Image (cartoon, one colour):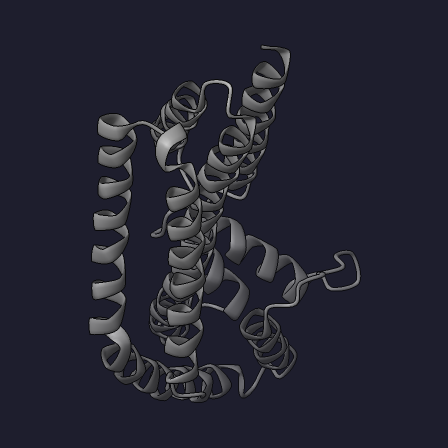
Length: 247
């Protein structure tokens, strides 16, 4: 009983930390965090309750739920990065319009960022502080796109006479890259859709087998099939990424 409680406590605590990190990074809103957290807690409880005295399956169930939650985290981060590139391009469009109307680069950025969601505003504020007050802010990030954006905006900020022209050239470069990325996404879109449908089918079948036939009689089959499914899932994602075009 104590081991079961510790197993459940570990799973819920780990899930809570992941969701709290997502919320602090503004990747999800509070309501979304509550919904995902509730679904995760219910899934973890189902695994632990159905496992009964089979501690091996109970631990496996908790880790499986954590893996699913971690996949949600990775998908959110990837979606935000992809969304950020498109939103940043839209920001540059607004900045160019405001600069053509006579505003400086820094004022154009401040006024333009108000049109976007809190996550994007937070990122733009970080970039703005580094670009305009680089001696006071130390920006530590490994995202190549953010580093490139900061360097280009710094150059535009430092060259007062040609700042607008630099922004226009950088915007055109991003438009070309986004066009290539869009074509790359179309190539792998069908594979991703099929993969997500298979995930839904597998999870539904797993829940049905556990509820109808029990865990103890089919524990080895469930463990082996789930392991093979996860290996295939990761392999499909890896192969799909290999097929994307590099820009």
